[in-house]
Structures are given as C-alpha cells and as structure tokens.
Length: 227
Image 1: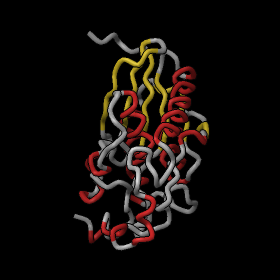
Image 2: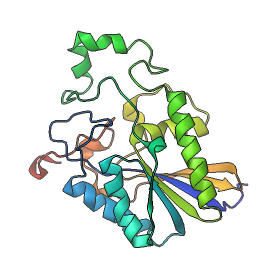
Image 3: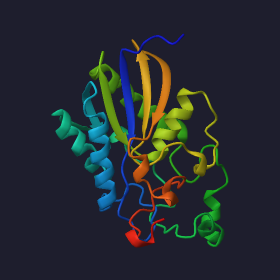
C-alpha cells in the first residue's frame, strides 16, 4: 500500500502559445501564450488554487511565466524563476514544423543531427535534462515540505523527468508523451522518498485536437480552423 504523501510537487506544462507559423520555438524569446493559452492558465488556477500550494517556481521563458501568474495571484505566491526547468536545447530550434516529421525528411542538412535518438544527438542530453529538473524538484519539495509545490516547465523536460522517476527508457516517440498543454505531472513524496506519480489535465477540454499528441504546441491557428 502506498503511504499517504506529505509533500506533492506538481510539474505543470505551460499553456498554448501563439505560434501561427508552427515554429519549434525552444528557448527563443517572444513566444507568448495565445488567448486560449491564457484561458488554460486561468483554468488551472481555478482548478488547483484551493489546494495546499505554498511554493511556485517557473522556467524563465515567457510562456511559462505567463502560465504561472494566475496561480500566483490565486494563492498569493511569489514566482521563483528557475533556469533549471527551462526548455531543452534543440538543433531544430527556429524551424517551422508545419509538415511534421516530413520537415526533417525534406531537409538533408538536418539528417546529421539524427544519428543517436537515445542521447539525443539533436539536443541537450536527456541525462542532463533529468539532473537539472530533479535538482529543481528537490528544492521545490524542500521549500514546500508538508504541503504542495508547482513547477511550471515544458513538455520535454517534464516527460523525460517522468520517464526517469518511473525507470523507463528515454527512447520514445514524441507523439506518445502524456503531457498535454497545462497538464499536471504530480510527484508524491513521503519525506524525501518519491512514492507515486500521478497525471491530470485540468484544462484538457480546452486543448485543440491537433495539439493533443503534438511534440510541441503549434498553437495560434485561427479559431475558425480549429476542430
């Protein structure tokens, strides 16, 4: 039987980004939440704002900071900006992925980055991502001991952290990630021991169908084009 957790650290993915060109924005500045993304952030604040959340930290990127604000206001919390929970680096940053995987197949100059999907060869090593994310999680756990904390980050760092704590392989299909927009991947601790991982989607009904399994949020498509 799983012991009752005394501390929970929720990893919250940011909301939808205004990105009409479908750019893999990575760590680039200037990518803000769309109107729908702001609605998602407020939905999360309304859904979990009455929980025992006493600590809030966020990636420095605009989309994460903007996702944090409604919850910070609801709970009266300061947002602790933490570089360790930032998006992963990626050699494909800045490229429009309007054609999905076909974008890479049609650009031979990109193929040289695809030789090792386990590391991965096209970006920040997964082990490095896990090390920085888990260090931030531990600090959040300590800051919220006996209560709950929220860490606002990005899909890949959150998913790789989950694979790590569940002792699963890092090798995966990005379309299989269970980490939709404004979802919560919750790490339950008894003392300093992780005992359970749970997942929820407070804004799940707001997510456009096309974004549910997207490796990144294309975002920003005109409302009339959304299913």
